[in-house]
Length: 271
Image (cartoon, rainbow, N blue to C red; front, side, top):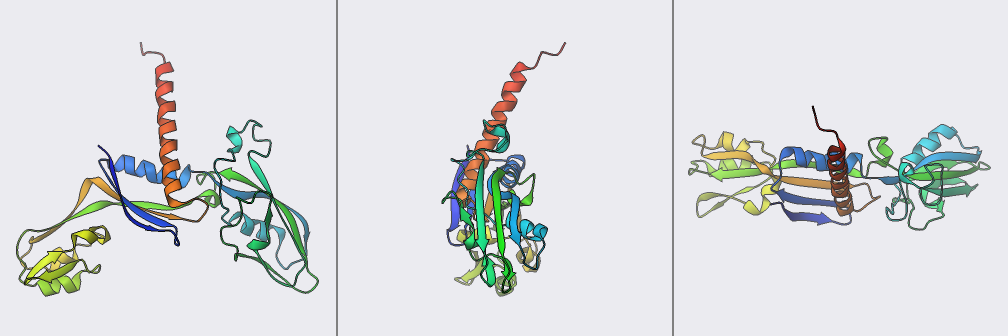
């Protein structure tokens, strides 16, 4: 039976960590890979320059624009290959963004105007170019949904995991002070003259084995990892919320599994 426990959530930094129990390494890695490669986000794909007298070439500015994270509304847009228009381009699979300025100074992402208020730059203070007196920058960009496996600009963030640490104090250490000092994550403490492990902070352990190596006698402390419990860390670039990334990843895995099952049923029996 699969169980999920939220360990930490930071909305300002767009980060979450959670514990999954009851899965194996292959399924954990499927979630990770699907999250960073298959979960779609919106990014600028094409740029048509109307005027660019800045010091930067069109290609450099276009590259910068493509890497600007855009808030993504997955309910309003389709992937081009799944759209009714067949990827030719329509309001359901692409969005137009424009910028027109001749003001001297730095051009920021906040100056980009979007036809959809839900889709706009995540970080408005991102610098695009610097204009001198008399210079201009004007373009029309087209943003579409894409996948991280096709280009990094569509990757929604960082998703990684580690096996749940299992730390046990089997014998009394003769040098508890040394163990407390040696642990880089400060996960040990001395209570009633005995060495104690902070179980509430076990997710911070990165299995360095420093405690087991320095403890006297040897093997008094064992540091192992669980085979069916995993701690996941999700750091969003801002296009989607961290929980949205995981939710969408699981939906995609479910859809692919169903598609595989359906194809297997259609396959002819071996002779």
